[in-house]
Image 1: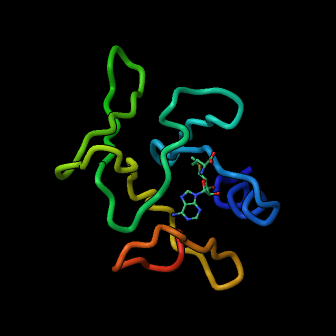
Image 2 (image 1 turned 135 degrees about the horizontal axis):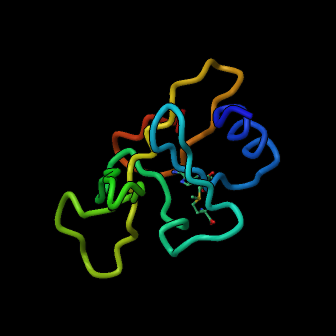
Image 3 (image 1 turned 180 degrees about the vertical axis):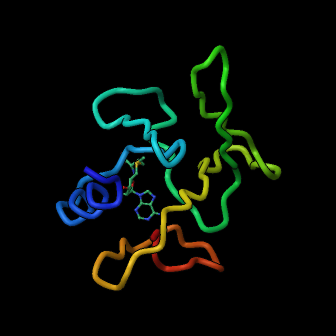
Length: 104
Ligand SMILES: C[S@@+](CC[C@H](N)C(=O)[O-])C[C@H]1O[C@@H](n2cnc3c(N)ncnc32)[C@H](O)[C@@H]1O
């Protein structure tokens, strides 16, 4: 099933989406298991960025800070979900001044 459809179904059921798109062909699915990074929320004004690197032919996600982060501040990155039509929008609650209001 395509990731965009899964995302829509899960969000309608108020379930979190723990899938990270690597490229057109691969998605890392941390729904069942994964490291603490699976709990990082989306922000339209993120303090972290993500990169995908290949190490020994395995894809790895690197999360690094993109600005100074205050002690106790929540880590977040821009999920960069594909933009969807009005019927499949997932509201964003990041609270940033420049919040786009939707995650997709
Ligand atoms: C990878 S999980 C992040 C951890 C999740 N918040 C949790 O408590 O387990 C992604 C899910 O968190 C929620 N989420 C993350 N960032 C959000 C945001 N800015 N606004 C609304 N929901 C968000 C959505 O349900 C999304 O599908």
